[in-house]
Each structure stands twice: as C-alpha cells, then as structure tokens.
Image (cartoon, rainbow, N blue to C red; front, side, top):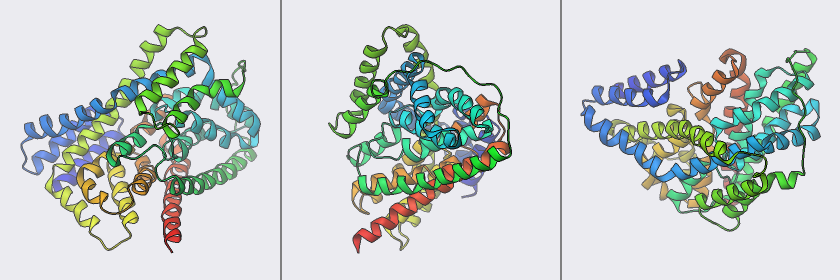
Length: 414
C-alpha cells in the first residue's frame, strides 16, 4: 500500500504543479510498479498503454465529433447567442446563475469541460462586468453548469454517460427519476450559494474590467437546434452516441455553412479534441495500472463487502477513484475495471448507472483536477482566488445531490 500512496502523492503533486497529465500518469505508474516490485516495462506497455489505447479506440469518434460541434457553435456565434440569451433574462443580480445554466445547456449537448472555458469565459466576463462581479467567480459558474447538469443529467451527451451506457448496456436516460432528484438538489444548492455570494460581492462593488460588444442574436430555437438534435437522438430515439453527435454536426453545418469556414472548423476542432482525449485516456491508463495492482484491488474489494446500502457503496468507491485521479471519466473506468463485475450484482443497472455518474462529479474536482488547472492557466486566476467557490459548487453541491438521490431510493423502497 505504501507504493500506491507514494505513486498517488507524486501524481497529485505534479498535477498541482501544472505538469501535463500525459507525462505525469506514466511516470507515477512506473513509481507504483517499482515500489510494488512489478515489472515496469510490462506495466507500462501492457497495463498503461493498453488502458490508453482501449479508451481512444472506444471514444475517439465521440471526442472528435463533440469537439467539431463545439467549434462550429463558437465560430458561428451560436454559443455566444445562447449565453447572452440566458443571461439577458436572468438579469445582473442573477448573472452567476445565468452563466451556470448557459454552460449547462452547451455542456449537455456534448461540449467537453476542457473546451467550455474557451467558449463561455469571454461571455461570462462581459456579463460579470455589467453586474459588478469579479472574474474569480467565472470558473465556479462555468464548472457548476458542467458538473451539476451537463454531465449527470439524464440524456447527457458527455463521455461519462457513454462509458456507463457501454458497461451497463443502458440508455442515455437510465435512472431518470434518481438522476433528476440528484440534479435538482445539487442545482438548487448551487443557485442559492451563487446568488448569496453574488449579492455579497456586488455590495462590495468589485470592479471587473472592460466590457465586450454585443453580438447579433437570432431565434433561440434555431440556435439550439443542433444540440436538440443530439439530445433527442440519444434520449428519445436511442441512436448510437457517435451517430447522434454526427447528426448534430450535420444540422449545425447546414444552419451555419455561410457563417464559418468548414476547413477552419475541422482543423481547429481536431486540435481541440486531442488534448482532452489524451488527458482522459492518460487517467484511464493510470487507472488500469492501479487495477492491475493487487493491493489496490484488495482495498476496493474490501469496501464493496462492507455492510452498507449498495448504492452508498457505489458512491463511496466511485468518489475514491475520481478523487485520486482528479478525473470523473478516469475514476469511473478505474472503479469499473477494479470491481465492475461485483457492482453489476448490487442492484438495478439503470440506477447504478446514474448513481455512479452523480458520484463521479463529487470529489473529481479536488485541486488536482486537470480541467480546473487548465482553466486557471487560461484565465490567469489563482487557486487562492477561486477554489473556495469552486469547491462549494463542484464538491459540496454534488455531494448534496448524490445524498438526496440515494435517500430518494430508500424512500421509494419503503
């Protein structure tokens, strides 16, 4: 166990020092192998590279298509229109909640959390400037939309939902009732927190900086039609994720063909997709190394045998994995590769699917979360300026939602 702890400490420290996870993951895996007296070459070539390659093989098309859809939305101005439309109707005093819901809508359609900051931050800065809010709150609002709604809500087009669909052989809307319960409670907490925090900051008259010019707006329905195409294809028609995303891309292209350069959209989206995909794949590879380590497998096997509610057990194990890796998708894969077969025996696969998804969005946003660190690098903000608010809406709020979801299952069974 000492070897695993040492490897994890190295992993977390290097991530917090903003060393790229693509290098950190295999290095930490090698340390774990050495300290556990395992063959380093075998662990890296088979377990680590194998985990990375399997992830890429399964989800390459999804990352490429979701990135292309997001890039078209940015280049055409659709993302800007959605954000402005929502924040316009929320008003200055509810600007934080408006940005959160604008992010949620775009995230729900499949845009990666790594790309949301590039899409939403310029709009959030403009809106916050008018409201008198500091830009330090933007990361929390953008992340909350992704973590509380975009990822766990039934029907989501995020990779996390697809991973669990593949494992449990369920649909995109699996565990609808429990999922909506969890999302409702976590979102309510976040909205109340952001509103109170905003009021306090507005009263302090914090200056944000320069405003951005308004852009032209078209009808909201036409703007969100590509996202609706993806969601309906997934949630209503049960079409394969890659095909659903391809349909969304096609609708977006037809709608925006005169507004964008297709070559630019394809080239830039390919570059945008590579980073997030390799981040997630590296976390998956590191998780595969852990699942090959007898000590960690024994640890997880002991937890799953504890005399607790099965859904509580799934929540605990998933949170351990996502917290250690700082990755929701990587943590899900680590849990499944370690004790997935036992989890399948614990209860309804649709409920297990949704509980795991809700749990995966809790402790994954500790300071070693690579998406959070990427947001800090992009915005120039500091951990001390942002992390308290970020923690409240991406750790505390999801834990409240997960708890409410599990309690609702208990009430239903009575």
